[in-house]
Length: 228
Image 1 (tube, rainbow, N blue to C red):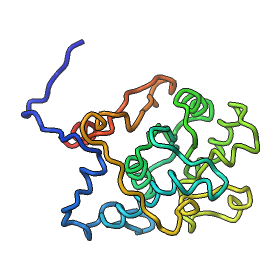
Image 2 (tube, rainbow, N blue to C red; image 1 turned 45 degrees about the horizontal axis):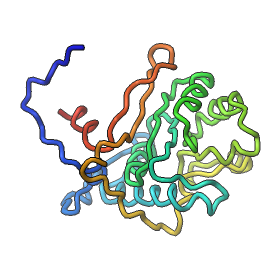
Image 3 (cartoon, helix red, strand yellow; image 1 turned 180 degrees about the vertical axis):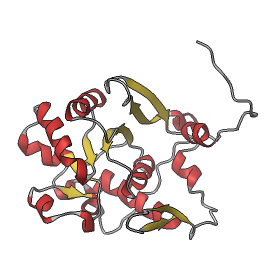
């Protein structure tokens, strides 16, 4: 194997988590916009992004059982199946803040391709955008998940305002449902060697959809690779 290094000088990567790096305690950019939905016009500032991510982290770790679901423990995996939307990056950051691994599935997947990734990555829950719910349901049915367990394995990547009466009538929950009185998780620390733990697992979507891609560490490797 040949490694082709960057022509730029090496970058010092601190041994901390992505969340701690992106939202340092001395951050002076709290009111700057972080994410903007161009369709709805809804946006999150950096302060709002950090707060909601930490609320989602607390909800995943502690608020699921209040709704009849199983809490997600540190180092366990969730699978996210969604197109680009405002809730996607915030939920990713929430998972990192809570020390939860994320398996990312392409929004172009068929139910068969999604079923493979669910089986291969072993997530405790599938977080799915409402527009892709039917594909996620077909994938879980193909995996012979008991019908009574399907609603307990799925969490919709949506706010309360985005939930339709039809979806509600089927018993599905959304992100806002697991946010417990706006409690926020103190960001899980991943200093030293723990900064090299796996945070994200990506799979190929351009070939068969069944080829494992690569792992991304819980530290800053992904960030440096993208922005440098």
